[in-house]
Image (cartoon, rainbow, N blue to C red; front, side):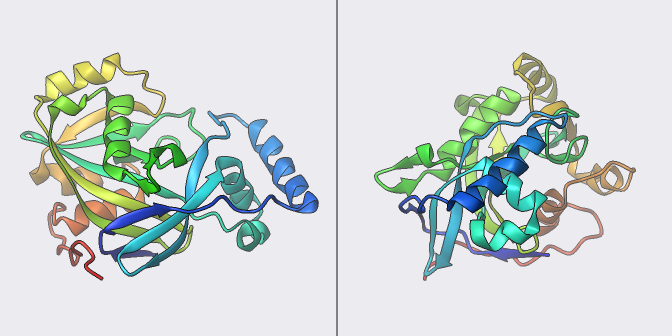
Length: 246
């Protein structure tokens, strides 16, 4: 279940939470160590967790990826850990179509699934003077994941805050236009480290419905973004929230 919320005017970084109790720390660490023994790329990076969405602002606080892993592995920990990650997701357009990527088999989450590119978590280091710069994080993800530099970005505008109410995940969605031909984009992708994606495709907007129904697994939030922009044939555009003015 997803909610499409207005784009926040500000993302405010609050104070770090208190340290975990000894018993909770042991449970978190046990889950983390077990997860690390399984195949897949996994490291304990920093993230920000949503505390509140109100009055045109999103308040977040620093957190750790291992807490999210523990909450996913042991749902009884969710309330105590209260990890609600905030990320950025992009819908990248070229003149020839939309960019989609197949998540690498080695990643720990949604391996082999297709999604809109780029996508990545916001970190506390993305804050300046107490406010998160989501656009800068988006551009960094775009360069890191498919080697498209900011000079090639014509526009990058947020159009929604997406709340996954089942997983308690939040994404700020951006509509991005880049100045590249498909062959140039694929060449740039080949120069990237390609840790996140094993392949990318440029799909014409008129072909998206056929592409999405061809047996490929598409991440639900990516499908929602395409539908919200009216880019899947036969789909009615979802209501498009604007920038919050509360």
